[in-house]
Every structure is written in structure tokens, then in C-alpha cells.
View 1 (cartoon, one colour):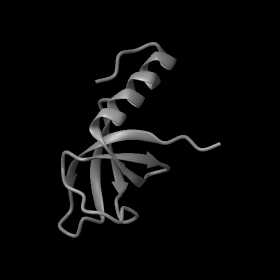
View 2 (cartoon, one colour):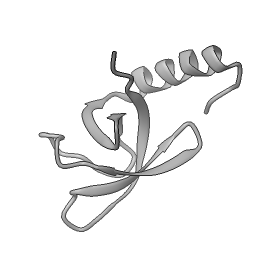
View 3 (cartoon, helix red, strand yellow):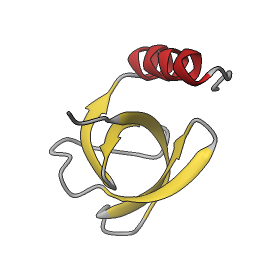
View 4 (cartoon, helix red, strand yellow):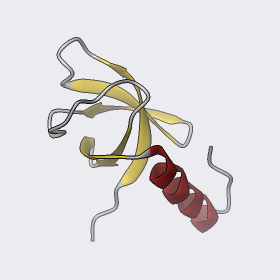
Length: 77
């Protein structure tokens, strides 16, 4: 089973290949090369094993982060 976490793109390198993504307050450097549509800071992506694998909308990302917070018993923003 794979687990992907929604996160917000904070910064991107000049080529758009790598970026910093905020996942519930934790920032991780991730590979962005697999996203086949335009991506900008402020967009949300689904991250698995250090790779952004899909661009998702903000409402869906926040909903999924809320579910994850419920699972571990904390509030995630």
C-alpha cells in the first residue's frame, strides 16, 4: 500500500525540477519532475517517497490533511 501526503509548494528551483513542499507544517525537499502540468509556488501536490506525483486542488488537499490529523490526533493546517 502506498501513502501519499498532500502538501503546498513553497519554493521551486529555476528549472522547476525540485522544490520545498510544506506538508502539515513540515517542509521537505521533493522532486517535481513528474508533474506534467504547470506548477507554481502556492499549488498543492500529492507527495510520495520524495516525489510529487500529482497536482491537486487546495480544497482536496486541506480535506485530506484534516483526515490525516484526525488519524494521529493533531490539528494540521
